Length: 625
Image (cartoon, rainbow, N blue to C red; front, side, top):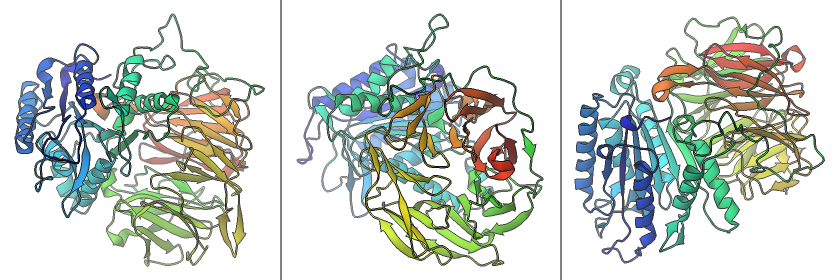
């Protein structure tokens, strides 16, 4: 949980804008700011008064920048942390967010914002991000933005990273080697306005935030992460049953040292005590219940039988300086691929390494001449290799082509191969495109796929799942048209359930969908009718988890990667793997890791009983029951 003495907070915003005719005053903004101030002090986090800077309702953007700088410098000097080491900075804005000027700068309006200098008399998000990053470069920074189009701030901060990625490695390491990252909790997406529940009482976002913080979660032992708080806030809004209420979003544009939004920082008033353990069935966040199903399973993290033999088999290293953080497997199981680095930092992933399954022999070091930094790589059964860099450029090459590569598309957010070889690409502006195997020419589109949504295939290729379109979860059958797999005109299932935020996985045959919930449990849904097959009742584990089915379909595997103390600095828990029976949800094994984990993927090796695991930069092969 956060240390109040080493947490500093800044609040700003406004409730009226007398110099702008198009923005109406609303007392709800002032009441929202008062809620925040009360929670920061003795009514919640217990942050000392001298660690809080309250600028809400104050005019003059330049003066606010100067006051923030003086406040940061003064508190860091007092706390003897000149660069913000082991310091958490909380920033709260309540009011209006808008785009101004020819450059369409995203700005946070102040009480004296005025024409024709709207952007100059507001807080520019880009300037604010730079100020916090440069004055407290080694700190962890968490921003709460209760305003319209709030998630636009995430793309601005991500853009700042992409500019840095182009710099030399030594300049990067010299400028900010210990930046602990940024997390944002946004009242609305980058395209949606936020809403007032009532102009005199509160904003929807502020109400939901404090419903989560003040009520807590009786199923969650210990403190809550920002992602958990967000999940509770969304559930509170969904419970209102009102149309058109924007869904809050969590974004983590900087996570060099891990996912700050997954760190348990906030007190949980409803945390169960040892005398009164958490209930196994909360009835929340699930699809339509199947009353005749197997029922609720035990916690994922629990006492379990010893791990099966043959776990933790190290693949022979392909390079003395190899570092893996993410991995994919071709549909036929012949190749593994992932971003390669010689330093182990996300700013230095300069190629996509392809290795031969089983032997670990390096087959190709792709895109190394492009001088790009890659998020992840993919390899198809046909030997085509993809690399997606941090700017959204998608490159493609072939294992048979020595050093050549080409830019396939720009502005890409997700790309994956259908098991049959069709390439599916999601753009940052929305839409799915389907590309012919081999030539990768665009053959079909799904234009209604929104920006920020995600998708996944079953291992047999029979089902496509899309998340974040309309109601929450959609499932599609498809057909091959001229060698290209394309979905049917309408989904065969469209569920009104919360879209998975942490992760989800389709069973190999497409008949079940396993979902990670931020409230700490895993549930499996029947893809035919949305009924719940089972639900676990325990905590997933520390860190930002992953989930997948084993390739043979008999087990669901949850990876809890572990966390580090001091806002992701010193290790406290190395996590491990929780293995569940895919039919019942019962925990069969808990396999403790000896290092931090970052990714898992199923592989057909050993008759589908193998799992690829990225563990402290090494690529390991674990066997699963």
